[in-house]
Length: 271
Image (cartoon, rainbow, N blue to C red; front, side, top):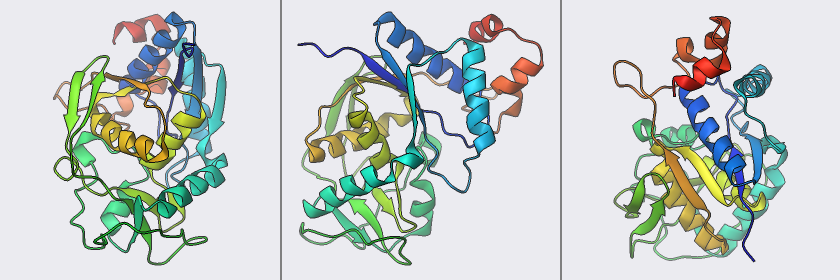
């Protein structure tokens, strides 16, 4: 029996949504509605240092104003026990290991790693010479993060519905990536993989700068024995200087465009 379509919007409440977010979420919305499927809104609020309740409220208001609707919603901060259980499974099966470095990697691991600030390739200082079971430390640790032990035997390949055939080689395009931070929080890669599976997502629609993250998440899916969903990576919107739009582009936030008096139709015409 063919599984019915299920998609998701996955905004992070660390700033106001900009025009690039709006375009990606509009595409996700339209693809879900065209398939007569279900659409989730997942509030990716794990970054306690930057996530704000006012941004969460604003993003929902701005999405509704734009004409985007969803059928169910959840917050990642409510799902920490689920991520912890998944992390324990990876450790027990030898797919992950304890790591005591580095601060830069730690800071980047909780947010989606875009092309221009991707997690650096790990040099392998803490990588054991063979796989063995580990146990996740209870609560925050002063010293220990946990990394996924990548296989280096063959490339990870998939065909994206928008970007076409993709191939990424573990050990060359990315290294042993962070799964769990020493402040007792999961990385973006782990939380995203667990959520997409638990929510029954059949197609992930997101920005093209996350293609490499898809390769990482496919490895996690294989480790968990999960089915890989379909992927649609949208082309990125850029400013007049050719720079990818980010939350620092306040003038192109949905809130600013609304305050300038633009209508939803006028904003969608800018896509």
